[in-house]
Amino acid sequence: MLNISQNEIFQDCKQRKAFQGHGWLTQGPICPTTGAMDSRPIQLTKTLRTPADLAAAGLIAPSAIPGLTTVGTRYAVAIPPALVQAMTSAGDEAANIARQFVPDTRELDVRPEERVDPIGDIAHSPVKGIVHRYPDRVLLMPTLTCAVYCRFCFRREVVGAEAALTTAERDAALAYIRATPTIWEVILTGGDPLVLSDRRIGELISALDSIPHVKVIRIHSRVPVADPARIDDGLIAALKRTGKAMFVAVHCNHAGELTSQATAACGRLSDAGIPLLAQSVLLAGVNDTVEDLENLFRTLVAARINPYYLHQLDYAPGTSHFRVPLERGQALVQSLRGRLSGLALPTYILDIPGGAGKVPVAAGYLSPEEDGTYLIRDPAGSHHSYPPSPP
Ligand code: SF4
Image (cartoon, rainbow, N blue to C red; front, side, top):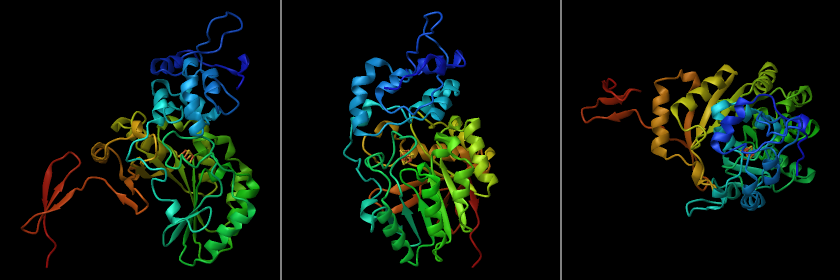
């Protein structure tokens, strides 16, 4: 169990109240001087990995430990200090951030429509560590470890369970890429590739750099928000071991995750010449209001991160409490179109269950009429006629 020493804790009293109002941080350590429960946010130095850790940090009530121990045995738990700090800095939004990471007994409620492998990774894996779903690109998953374990993860059945690929497995995966000339883009994902050592990341990047038909390397990571200090000079030097186009896609679902440290970490990547994209998941109780999404996308763009995809939640086991109905997602995206610059609007996207691929699912704006004209709906919901193309 994590032992939080009394001088590791607390900066500001009033923000703990936001957690208390939502059921988190229900109990804090006792002040050594007054004997009263300290009411200021926790400053942690270690990742929380068990329900007992969470209770000691005040993120759950001690009475919740037995129920959440079953959840934690089933699905990996890890909340790094940077995300605890993000919660404690988020005021009234703290609970929306916490829901993504604090386990919940509803995760044991598996619905018939939910799948162990929701987007068909297994069916499209020719070699361990590779998913080859589209002709021109592959996923390369060098590790299934993450800095944080999200409660809604579509790979929740596999993340946290295995170590990194062995050297032989990694070499076999690279050999597959080298032998498949249609592969134009390699997406390093997992797990989170940026939890690997600088040496291992550098070796991977160098190996991909040496394959002539690979033109683009993309890295999917939650590390810039979950462990911003990891984005240091050594890691950036490892990423720069290629002259090929490289993008880092940051997984971020709430503006509050972009603390000053996370924003600075993203800035270091941008300053190194690595363009940043964002992937976000539409999640009930986290970001399912127009205001939350607008704030998220504006904050991303201001941090030099291009909002790329807003994902409809995949049907992973035990995630129904996060699911936003598709029609509601369409209405939210439609409202955003009237409020946000196109620069800040991601594509609302759905992965077809089973692995048939991604499709955009925003509501249509155009419908053909019998006379050859089109009826176009504007962001406010009014309709306009659009003339047909000349013959
Ligand atoms: S960081 Fe990504 S892969 Fe890891 S648990 Fe979260 S969503 Fe899943």
